[in-house]
Length: 294
Image 1: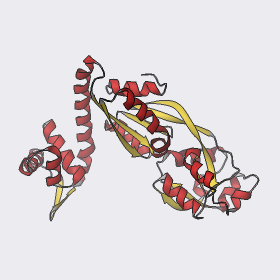
Image 2: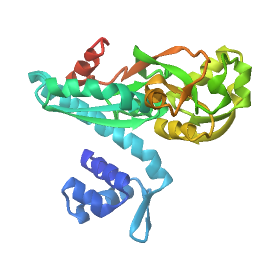
Image 3: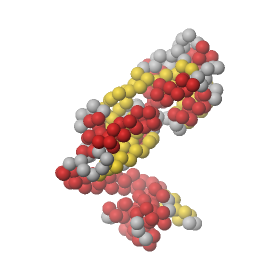
Image 4: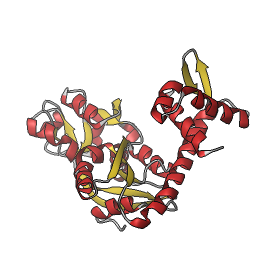
């Protein structure tokens, strides 16, 4: 197979549409269809279901997609290693970040980086901690920024900066007026939490275990995919939650949230880089801005 075939397959898989993939790649549709057909014929497998005018990845296609992306990322890194012999003059940087960092901490750093290096195009992808780590493992992202610690042998993990998790509720909730809360008190509340895999949830659950409370005993009534959705549901009186103090700040200022008296630890943010892949000069430069070793 060729890199061009992989590039075409990934474009089709991401868009689930031959014509849109062809337009994005600057190719005619027949060339895109031929490349996909050649891959399928060469390996005697079907990568896409054709459902009317739509296409969907088969199981083989779903397995192949991250591998194809990883090969393309390695090829791009190899090309970048050669072009960087003349210094940080052009190129791109793929960054993945979990939601709290992406929304409240990282933008200022990226603005500073772009101001110093306007010739470098920066692409930011946002996910939860598990998704960000996987993006770095797969080579889709050069750098990952997450809130939770990651146990992944393929990655180097550099702690930096941080925030504090706090327990918040609507001002009308009993927790808002309680002078102090014990771990056992948390079992009486309805909880609104981020999805499993998020750094905020994993750090909160680890803190509960350290306090002798099984997180599985919490009455979780809603699991939501974003910090903002969690905050809005708590402001509406749907339950209580634990979020970063950065996320809760606006609700606390406006009086829509109240901080409950339950102590939670300060947590570090973590910079993730692949142990074996080439680290571009752009990636090393951005890492240096946060005090991490380049």
